[in-house]
Length: 131
Length: 286
Image (cartoon, rainbow over all chains, first blue to last red):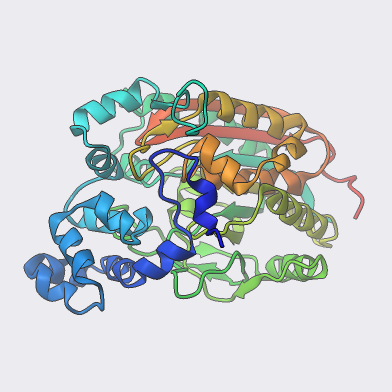
């Protein structure tokens, strides 16, 4: 049986947050949600590994958080809306995280956005003839 | 009978909240975005809505993956905002209109939308920032709200066709609301943007502009797309467009464009603004 996400495999560079990802990432995302409280943000910053141990996440998920490897966190079921709370705890914006995930310096990413963003042409669909 | 004055649709990204808090409205980066709003504020000042029915998406402040309703309607006397964990100042509680909320819920369920009803519900930036853009300043917004949250976080998402039908049902509820109130229908989110993965920063201006045109005169045109199509055409988070579709559907018939603005970028997002006056605010059939 094909999964819902298979239908999205045509779209380049995109992981759709579907049932598969949601089940995989439940506790990772739960950890992220705890960072909506200032006390928890302080506790996480004081002892990251100790704080992460409170959540029944996989070792790979914990390591991805410690490494701030957002692409890895997404692959392991993280949802960007929740992961952004880690970024905000570190003092980073959504735009900074987007730059990290696309592997370019933030100033270059920002310049790309000011120039109109990542163009649809060539980035819509893997089957796009212009790609 | 209620008077449905029209609709305003706007983007709502958290960075807007930080820009407002820092007073950056005339900063060169933000000016083309904020300059879109004064004409809409003038129209709202003339239209004088008492109530805003707001189609929006919750991003984890009230709903998490433990219990994620596809459509949820607030039915409270007030709604509180809270720390979302990304540094936007919180706002004072926002007044609700519980009587109208329950009337909307009754119509939705009669129309076979099995919605979640929330007598206590926190509202996030997707509801508070549009109100702050429409009614800036220190005081509370001069409207009571009926919040309608649409799942946009976890697929499967409802289709644009379903979002349209949801809006139509809300429109039927407003047409039969026997109270002397003026209602504006708000849709928040979008337009094209993607926050994650290698395609982050994706913007599709032709698609956005096509949608903004279609929403004026031929909104049903957008119901031919699937949620998948919207992800492909407007980015992984571009599916917030559904709230605009629902808001337009709630107006039903003919509308006149009051004002629109489109600007790239605000943060990672194509910012859209569209205000529509209802051509027949009183004469709609129930």
